[in-house]
Image (cartoon, rainbow, N blue to C red; front, side, top):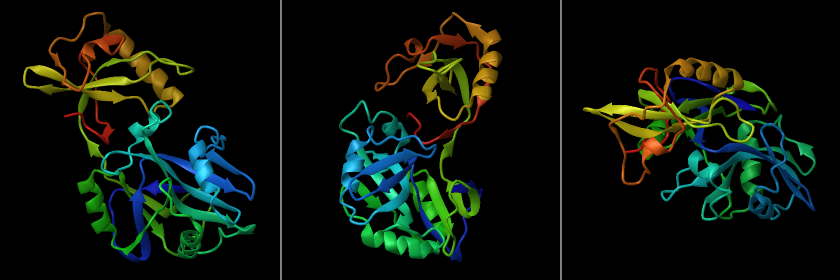
Amino acid sequence: MLATLVDEPFDSKEWVYETKWDGFRLIAEVKRLSVRLFSRNGIDVTARYAEIAQALRAVIEPCVLDGELVALDAKGRSRFQLLQNALRDERTRLQYCVFDLLFLGGRDVRRKPLLERKRLLKQMLPRTGLLRYSEHIKEKGITLFEKAKQAGLEGVMAKHAAGLYYSGKRTREWLKFKAMKEQEVVIVGYTAPRRSRKYFGALVLAVRQGSHWRYVGHAGTGFDQVMLQSLYKTMQPLKTMRCLTGLQKKKRIADPTKRYNHHRRIGAVCCPELGEFIQ
């Protein structure tokens, strides 16, 4: 079940509100002798996140769970950037934030109201460092959204309290409000593609600061094949072998002029959503 993006948060007695976790969707199939984890696209990722599968063995009844796999920063906030590096960094704090229950003890509970499913989920989910029940509040969506913005979280989910669960469908019984920051930036280069990806890896971004350009990060996710090809074609006439001058680096960042392969003459401007802006 997928949520619909809307612009403005709201208050309603008929809705409940939860944190929008900044990770990726994970369905857990728990049986008496085994646990399997699946991505939203149905790919088996059990071996990749074996510690989460092991923690779920503490669940007593067979069930199917829906949640978000996240990686936590030092302040306990979920950060997708950390999750991308989780397999290379053993220090990453992973957590499976479970927010829905689809099957329990062989019974299909998807046609039960959301709050009834969450009540059953809270009763049966073990409390460990790797497993987390996704709490909700009633009525006050605007208040939670403001708190999410102040805390630097991705956003808020609104769910109809009496809503059913529709597997694989995008509905308006789940809504999402994003609290991500936006910043107009200039594309100054791109990295080479890796593995099976074509055209380019990530866009290199900068902002104007006085007489200098300041590197602010990379943007490499959210592109489908058509967009990758289109952007690559647009950038080719602008490519240059001359390194961009005046691109300032920060102490925490290696020289940005040496971190990407292809420089561009200044031109294209984009306005990405930024979870973390490099100061």
